[in-house]
Length: 276
View 1 (tube, rainbow, N blue to C red):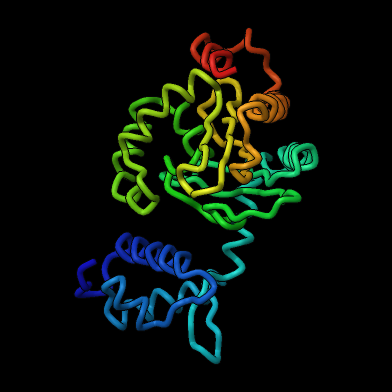
View 2 (cartoon, one colour; view 1 turned 30 degrees about the horizontal axis):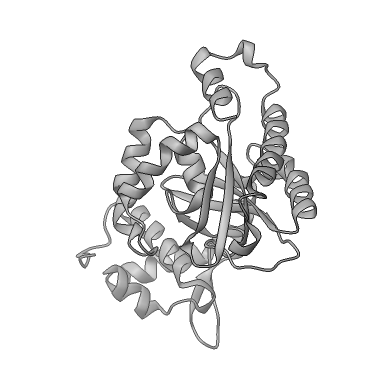
């Protein structure tokens, strides 16, 4: 990013503040110094100080006194939790995640769309401990990476999905051999089958299955995914796991909108039925 000459307009300052928050989010627990933030984002010292001071005042950024490193503040976590529950999705889905984890012994995730990304809204750890791409609640990955996000992407309007994959295309190279073409080619199969699956192609030894959550009359908003070691995802076990997730998703969709398919627009109803 080119260095800024002045403090900028209100809109420019807002854009830069968001950039600071995103940068600190990527920095993780280690945080970042004022110099790191300023040099990475191309900000002048006065502008960086002005933005970070304002963010710190609102609790969106915290500074550790000894290291003088900045990290995302707890106020963001509180807002994130509120956003996650904005539709009641997290509360409604928690029992489903617990049942799936208990029935399978594997880790179960509730993933939701956040712009061009997919964010982990909730997770239930299974008996078999494995890492995930998002890592923790609040972690996010580019839309199109992994079955959980592809399950959502497949049921978005085609024009919107195209914008997302083309925008995220440069990011895919950070995930092994994943490309925009591979993401796009997988979408038709996901729509036909009603689920997305990865047999250890994205992360060696780790597989995942995901089913989209499609509230009647609305676009895909989220998905439920099971992550497990590839050794535990046999061809014989795959249909059983898919059926378990789909059963929970159907119950969840009915809770999000109790209207019957007969009251839906024909296109929305057809889409819901097609993926089952």
